[in-house]
Length: 173
Picture 1 (cartoon, rainbow, N blue to C red):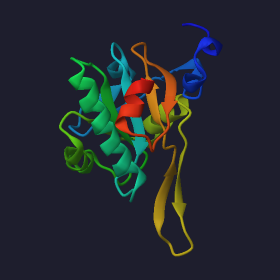
Picture 2 (cartoon, rainbow, N blue to C red):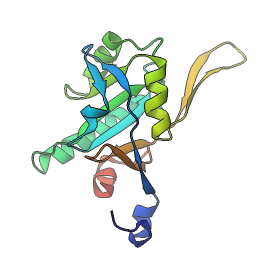
Picture 3 (cartoon, rainbow, N blue to C red):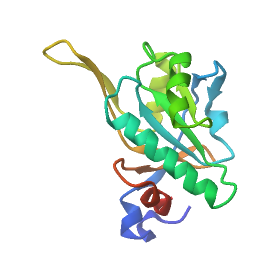
Picture 4 (cartoon, rainbow, N blue to C red):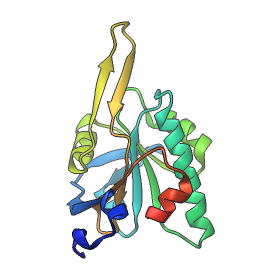
């Protein structure tokens, strides 16, 4: 609740000047359980928006998040939740997400579901995504690559840039 301008410059680059409340949404976990804004309350969450067919950024970021998770857990019983949100719900089914996320640990939550639920969640956090088809007909998804930090009150408060080490992200958190 302190003034953003009083934060050190290194944190100003990741903190949002104003917290953004997560809109009411509903998606499904990799276990076919409903997941909504209520599931983001009471603990901090790190949300990463990506897709399963992503050739490089998504798996690299998920591996980094796994490293962040291990570091936070080593410091004590950290309740931070780690959530992968598919920006390709037509292709990324809960079962496929579950199999994919198992390579990165057992305690990552994967979300997919109706396009409207995705648009609502992403829009409330300023996350962009769009289908892209190149001249050869190869399909991919363009998407925000930052990791969105959601506080225990269900508000987006920061965006951690990708491409960092887990230790650097833990220090920012």
